[in-house]
Length: 244
Image (cartoon, rainbow, N blue to C red; front, side, top):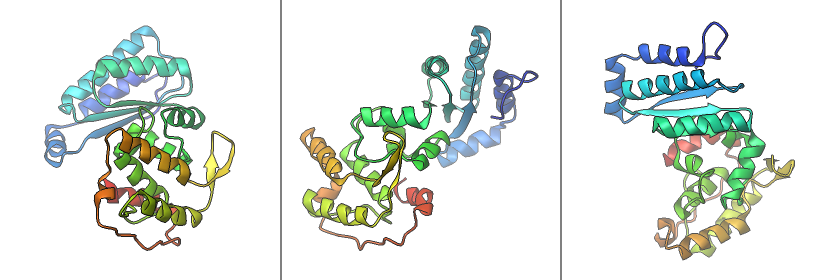
């Protein structure tokens, strides 16, 4: 949604989006299994009346697209975030409030996902409403073994998930791939770090196995993909298409 102004509030813009969606568009969304992603950029605390109108506008949009809706709210303060978190519970569709990269990096690590750098490219993709499962889950819970495996493959610039006969083979291949990758900026420490800490990744996978989650790649035949260090990190978003 475009930024709200004194002449046009956020709730009015949301109602305008709802009115602009025709029945053909809704049917096309449902037929293709797609969702409408609405990204809201908010900087100020809404008043009680405006917050109620925003909630009603989002509910109207939700009903218009038959719940094929995902909402991302980019905020600049904790108090504002709390208001929209409550709105998300009320609206009842996938609803994510994204704070600053420093807050999000700390929150992701606090969920037990500190084995990778929460880099700016991950933050921007979450702000844009990317629906890939690891991106949606990393702030709310510890990633499963399968999700960790796929995320590591993408962060280490692989065309396909790294596979191995056992966890040792997988981690050896991951370590070689990590050595070929440049460091990225880590907002938590304010410096550059390798994109993946393979030691911590191994601990996360062992924890997943202990919880009864056996990633399917560990049960697969040993297929160690050739490492391709020349595959540029600028193609990160394209890589995600391999795993969605």
